[in-house]
Image 1 (cartoon, rainbow, N blue to C red):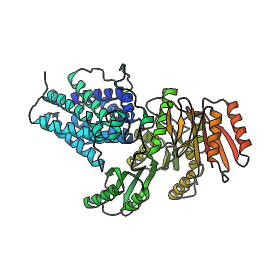
Image 2 (tube, rainbow, N blue to C red):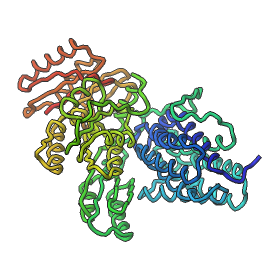
Image 3 (cartoon, helix red, strand yellow):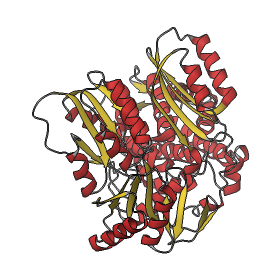
Image 4 (cartoon, helix red, strand yellow):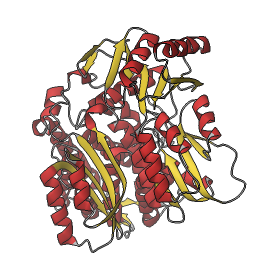
Length: 564
């Protein structure tokens, strides 16, 4: 039996069913993730994005379409993580703009909403890459427009849209060679298909349990074999640096200016994403010349939230993620750990992301007002950041993400806060964050402190000692499953069979004649006596440097070593 319209209650059920389906399939989708680099977190990022919206949607009682649209759009924006999550939130944003002023959705409205969602997402990505989630979204939207003129049965229409979406998804390996090489379809496109299929099941009544979030589903055998990321060639990445920044507009930035700016960025890179507001322009581009992008942007205004990441490091970070996943089950969302709240409103406040009791105590001891527990597979969301900001009573709040995968969420949170000045210090490791906070000077201005903290943070070299969960080759080093790895700021430092031996080899690779201080943070899997022996060995081998030993209590990383 067909249906001719979807009211707000039906859409609420469909959306929650869609969230449930994506959450259930996120690990499978992660294993498909090989483009643009094999970082394996597409499913997680998309799931956390839709789950943030699902919380708001589930809280509505007897919703109307306007309130439901607001909950979907606002929730997904605040919870958006990673590029795949941001694109999904843009699809929702455009979709809800089309439906918010109707009482019920018919086939024509549904088709128009899908088209508007696709247009919104394409607009956010300056040079859309075909063979991705965008291609799948456009294929389904085009099919919906075709069907809307032929039928008023929504179930019939959606069923055909899904069939066509699956076909478009199956063609993505023909559009992206890296997918064909790995024998997989696009992970973001697969995630979008799960969203639509889950929503369809919600409409047909096949799903009746809508507990959101946190439910788990026994899926049985995986639908696909895990991708061997060691076989994925990341050397063919044409533009190696992921460059992001915000332009604080100081002159007119009209449509013509925007097109000229985009054309220039396209001439020096790819993977462009530009989101404009009245006063700022957010920019993301992959390029080999980040400085050129910065210089061009400066013609429109001042820059903030600037960061540059080497994308080829994503492969080794995936190894860390896998190791963490095997080592312990972590909560899907970050848990906030609060030091004693400030007694009164302050001029400056500090938020830091930390993992491990010892590291948290160190941050509290050097002035952190609020700690967010997080790590490689436990990335705090934009909402987590906003909650932390709300807890700190200060005019100016510095955020220390201490992980490259958390910086974007912190920056997005900063753009949503109007009553406080939020400054994101782009610390990529815990030692960098500690160094930055130690070098804060209350007598300096915000700008002077940012310059000082980032400069001092940049002088810190970091090694992370962990283990490999698969056999691979990184930076010319052959790594066997179970080997101990010493990961540096810019690549692999050492590989060995013993924790202590690899840690010492990594330290030797970092230390030079100008090194004065070495700090060794030992993790939860290392005993105090073993750590003392390691520190004594470092003192004997490097007598010119001061060696400090701290209990970090961090999981997975046997040691975090910083050299200044």
